[in-house]
Length: 75
Image (cartoon, rainbow, N blue to C red):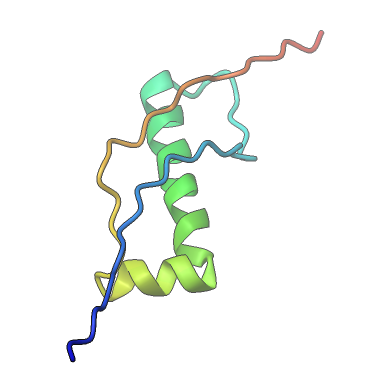
């Protein structure tokens, strides 16, 4: 009698808020880079996801994209 073993791989797309703030002297390229770095830091800091990224069980396969930058003018 044979034993059947099943395994799965799952792709997840997530969107998360980044709580960093930037002043009006910061250019958009810097905002985008730092926002991506912070989002990656959030993932890496997650105990399970971070350890899976470190040992190669998980990987980021898509491009990290900044989809919105909210600007608030305060008089």
